[in-house]
Every structure is written in C-alpha cells, then in structure tokens.
Length: 313
Ligand code: ADP
Ligand code: TRP
Image (cartoon, rainbow, N blue to C red; front, side, top):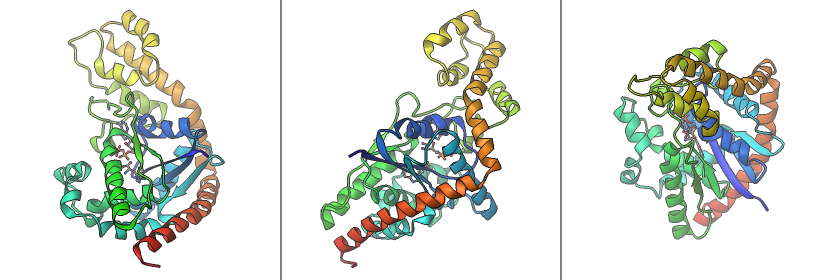
C-alpha cells in the first residue's frame, strides 16, 4: 500500500515560479510513489478573494496549472475543497478543542494582520480549516513551502490532542519541505510572493518574463549578481552555470538575458499545455467532478468515524 500525500494551493491569483518550485513540482515528482490528494483550497481563498468572478477564474486557473505542470488526474485525486462539506464540519469540532492563545501564535496570521489585513474570524481560524483538510485523509506527508510549516505543525498538535481526548482517530502528518526550494527568492531577493509584487509569473508571456527578469534587483558590488544567480539555480545546475557566470563576470544584462531564455525554455511546454486547457474548459470541469466524487466518499467515511468517536452519531 502506498503512503498518502495531501496538499493544496489557494486560488488567490496568478501562479508564480515560487509556487511551482516550492509546491507543485514536488506534487508532480511524488505522484507515482504516493496516493495523492491535491486540492484547490478555495474556502481558504475566501479570506482574500471576495469577488465571485475572480474566485471562479482563479479556481479554474489553479486546476489548469496543476494539469499543465504534469499532475495526472488518473494517478492523483484532484479536487475542490468546497466540494467537501465535511472539511467545514470537522473544523467546528476542532475549534472546540483549540484555544485562542494557541492560534494567536500563528505567524502567517500575525504577519497578515501586521500588514494591514482585516483580522476576520476566517483568517484567524485558517489553520483549523487547513488542519481539517489534512486530517480527514490521514496523510503521512504534506509537501509545502517553508511558510506553511507552522500550519502543518498545528495539524500535528491538533491530531494529537484529538487522539488524547477521543481515542486514536487521526494519523500524525509530517511536513515535507525541500531544502533547495523551500523559499524561492523573488526579484527583490525577498521570498517570492504575490503579496510582495516581486514574482516571476509561471505562465506569463515572453514579454512578461523578460520584464520580470530585467527587474531583478542587482547591486554593483560583485561579479555575480546574487539575486539573478539564486533564481537561475532553479533552472540549471551549479555546474552548468559556472562557465556562464565565469565568462560574464559583471555583465548583468547578459546574465539576465541567459536567465530569461532558460526560464522560457523550461516553462514553454507547460505553458503550451496551459493554453490548450484554457481553450478547453471542459477538461478542468471533468477533472474536478471526477476527483470530487471519489474524494467525497472517502472524506465522508472518515467524518463518520470522527462523529462516532466524539459521540455525535
Ligand atoms: P503567495 O505567497 O504568493 O501568496 P501562496 O501562499 O498562495 O503564495 O502559496 C502557495 C504554495 O506555494 C504554498 O505551498 C507555498 O508554501 C508555496 N510558495 C509560495 N511562495 C513560495 C516561495 N517563494 N518559495 C517556495 N514556496 C512558495
Ligand atoms: N495554506 C496553504 C497555502 O497557503 C494552502 C492549503 C490549504 C494547504 N489547505 C492545505 C496546503 C492542506 C497543504 C495542506 O498555500
């Protein structure tokens, strides 16, 4: 029996190469070795996207991105979080064994509020919904970017607490974070993130990729532009890059041109597939419908066991 893997991405905007290397690539690389549950975390996205048309479009685009990047719906259970009403149901039960001071320690929540985001109850409870997403499927591993590690730890703590109170019910999940790509830097050297506006789009046009790469912040103190190199390393090995950087010491423009060309070569085939899917929306609808049916049966079975454990049956 294969071990179970679960993860998800929020449909909150256009995907960038940080999402690809930090999250999606891992799902694709692991799909043969694990039984995979990969969701479009649309309920989480409601904490940010409150425009119905934009949310619908984002849900479509994240699913199309998963497929274009190589997730095979024959191997992976791809589904939409909001199709599974039991995620919300379990969240309520978990809320009842979680304290406010415990959730107040969540770094992602504190950062968002410190940056001026309204402290909605949903934003505060975000980690408990994510905990439900995870625990309902008993995954052994949850691959995520480094910024999500604490949320997986919250899922672990909560599973342990539930098991102590009501008996062994949930598997304790492990976060899986790649050393090399846990934090993909953005064009300003900070973590690449939609909210910092420092991204290189995953499926941008050639012009958009050029523009983002030319915007990479360089300082003139050394031969090697650190921010360019840090991103370049995602696309080529250090051995491949060594002669290029040696031959172009201090020539930032030439190095950026080389990086832009490497990004386009790497992304090209996936971008073609993404465009094909955009032209055939039924592909996405069919995948989500099929995934939803299978996943729902499993989630409901687990939820029935949870209700029995707590005395709600
Ligand atoms: P953003 O920070 O742009 O809003 P999300 O929070 O939607 O990105 O992230 C979706 C997934 O991509 C998560 O698993 C997250 O950890 C991963 N991820 C996002 N940005 C990066 C990054 N710069 N490096 C590595 N992983 C990232
Ligand atoms: N919070 C995650 C993010 O920001 C998305 C997510 C929702 C998730 N539910 C999950 C990730 C369950 C892993 C497992 O990207």
